[in-house]
Image (cartoon, rainbow, N blue to C red; front, side, top):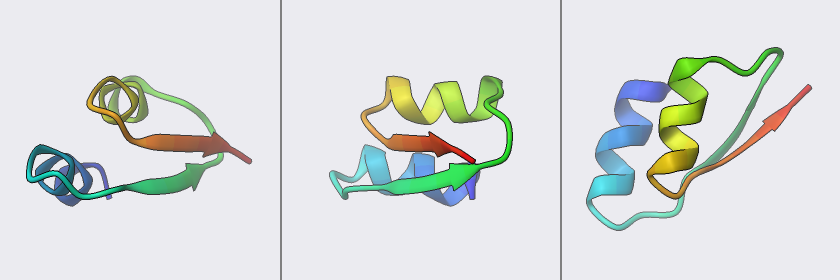
Length: 39
């Protein structure tokens, strides 16, 4: 999801999601304005 999520965020869309563990990929999405939940 991180690839398409990054593109969508750069185009102004709202992106939310979850992952079992946080990583550099999820942190990048958060830095771009996405919301990522752990669990």
